[in-house]
Amino acid sequence: MFQLARYPRFFWRLLRRPHRVRLHGVWLELPDDLPEAVVRGIYREGYERGEVRCLAAALRAGDVVLEVGGGLGFLSTFCALRLGSQAVHTFESNPMLIDRIRRTYALNNVSPILTNAVLGSGGRERPFFVERNFSTSSLIRRSQQATEITVPELDVKQVIGELRPTVVVMDIEGGEAELVPLVDWSGVRALVIELHPDLLGADRTRAVTEVIARAGFAENRRVSSTRKKLYVKR
Image (cartoon, rainbow, N blue to C red; front, side):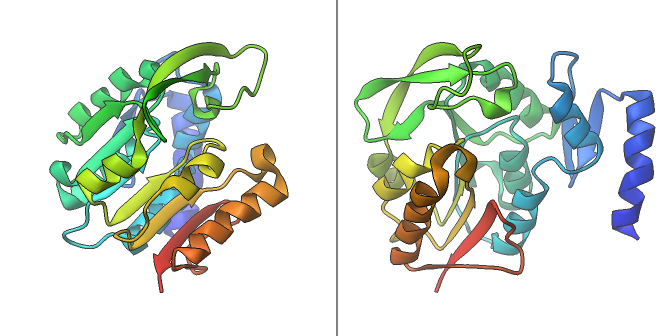
C-alpha cells in the first residue's frame, strides 16, 4: 500500500510544484535551478531509493560513515539522523554543491563533517568536469558542455586511517574504478556503492567488483539492484 501511495503523491507534487519535499525522513529543498530530472526523481520518491534501501539494511549503532560523493546531502543526512552528525563524513568534489549540501543539513538540523575534495592517491589537484546536471559531474568528461575546474585531492589511505569508517558510501560517476583499489578495506564492514558500467565498460566494472570480493565482501542480493549494491564482510 505504501508503494502504491507514491503515485498519487507524485502527481500531486507535479501539479503543485512544492519547493520542499520530505523523502525517507529527510527534508530536501528544490530550488528553481535544480535539474528537472532530479526534481521529478524526488517527486516520485525514486531519488537515491536504492542507496537508502541498502543503508537501512547496513547501518548499525556505533557505525562511522564515510561518504564519497555528497550530491544534495541527502544520504549523509539520512545517516546523520540515525547515527549522529559526528559519525558521518562526506567528501564532495563539486564546489558548487557545498552550499546546497549545507542547506540540506540546516533544514534537517544535522551537521555531518563536509569536505570539498577528491579522494585518491593525494598530493595534487585534479581536473573535475561540472555538468549542467550536477548528478553527472565527474572526474571523467562526459560532454563537451562540461566546465573543467580543478579540485584538491586528499590521500584516501590517510583519510581512512584517521576516520576509521565502518561503512563507506560511494557514488562518484565512474571514479570507483580508480578509488576502490586504493582503499584499505580492512576496517570497513559494509560498502554501499553505485556502479557505472555505462561509463567504465564491462571489464573495468568487473575489475572493481573483483577488488571488492578480494577484500572479503559479499553482495547482499536481497537489497542490491543492478547498479546500486550493498556489500558486507563475510
